Length: 122
Image 1: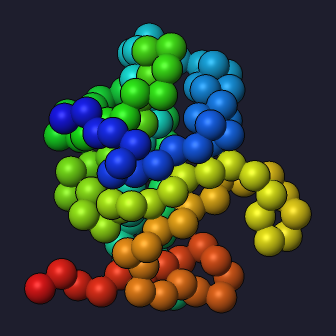
Image 2 (image 1 turned 90 degrees about the horizontal axis):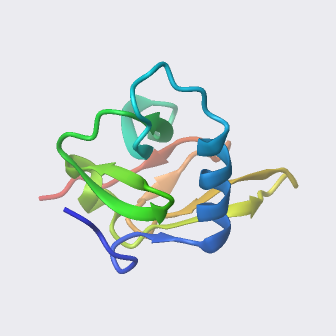
């Protein structure tokens, strides 16, 4: 299913960052489809971490078109915890350029900023 900017917002700055990164990836022959954004549970002191990877296999994932034939892919199982998330690229708290994630569904975050917590859905 193709998502719209209403479900997950990718700023122009983030879109440009991902397009630059994808243009520099060396492929092993399999076509690169885009970027996968997912939540890895059981990581860090908060319990979950956001992960961003280059993706080639896109089965069972929703997507947002980011241009030049690439998309931003999200596992269907993570979609409810990511609805309303804003993905940006800019200066972080320490002054370094980085992907910035603002997710209204987080119930907490670790002091290091790498790990987040989600309340269980009932």
